[in-house]
Length: 501
Ligand code: MG
Image (tube, rainbow, N blue to C red):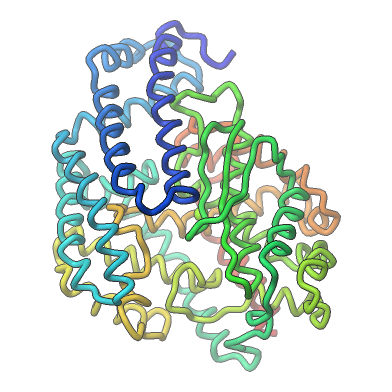
């Protein structure tokens, strides 16, 4: 039994109520993005805002808070300590923020989303600017209420990545940046550089592509009794009740098939993290992935280390050809080159593995100065374009392809972006640790033998839910703290071979 302490058990019984609201809020969010007619959005926003207040009043109720206090100082096991850690963080969050600020954030985000959509459509930053000013102001107030040491950004990033700080992120980025920038420069200047691949133009039938995605995920081990795949404007994963009900989405553009396939593979990585959690953690505060960075390490592991490998292309080459007959003219090696082509792009979600890090560094640097107050929102588009030129050597023709491309800031998510890079970097370390135990995973992928990979991830990471904080989980899983050396080595190996030898 994971939870034996009487007070903890009482807390978990109480928590079932909040779990039920979380569960239904998730279902409402999934519905908003996959099923709901557009006209339903305003009332859905109201329902989510009202239920957010219910959640806050639950976490701050005297009864619940005193129960949690009572458990402090008791002799607890790891699972129970995890429950206490997660609840104390959540209670601190809701106690620190005035309810008016919580409500103001919900309302501001609702109108900011609509303004952002319009601004992006018309490529006119001035439509979004006043909303973003409010959002930055709210996030700065939040940081003040939550408290921090050093930089105010520390209070915000901790909401997405427990324990992460500006100092930590700066150190990680300063370690990987020279390798990433040097690799990109050498690739773009290489004789083997190509800025277009014919396979980007090959079209497919939507149903054939969906069948291919399903075939691949079934080989990975998808149990369709507990897992769904649908379609949405942007691919995402939602955990409704892991391990019993986890859902992903992908997208279908009708051509450039790697986009649909690699999105499905990416989201599968997120989904498996939720599907393989210890069933006894279900409906408790420690159910589900512990942080966005660890979550992204799982999706990036499946996307970059499995989906973009030559072994994967070779293993599924016949399936690719069955879905898209015109692929016949291309050898597996050509498909591999297409999956891994490096090209400095304007758009983050279309970026290759190397440029991707630079897209994140750019956003992170801008977020920091916005929160400091040293960059006014009105100067953001210009600052964006200058950094794009500096890091990627491209300049957006308009704001829709620049500063307006991502929805995150409209959602109030400042401090979220760095977790994408942390996950990408960590995924290489996870692969290294896995290969010490299993040998080269290319062999397993080539045989479509994904069982050992799933089991390794389950034992080392997935089963633990949020029991351990991110840092401790990484150490337990890989034997050391986040170490960017593995990512640097991965970049060199994969791209040296393809471009530079
Ligand atoms: Mg992801």
